[in-house]
Image: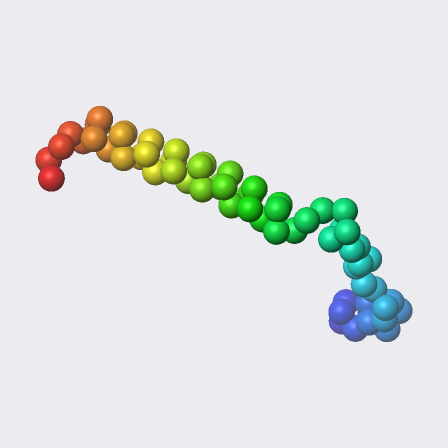
Length: 60
């Protein structure tokens, strides 16, 4: 019932469209974010591995 109410009284609710491609280069932002997240992931994985060997020992 609530959805029908919204469609009946506000049929044209839309998010505003922003074109930021002229201000920011999307591929540059994507490259920077990918590098940052890759470094964070490497640190997390290395820390996990070090903690495993520190607390569990090398029993492989």
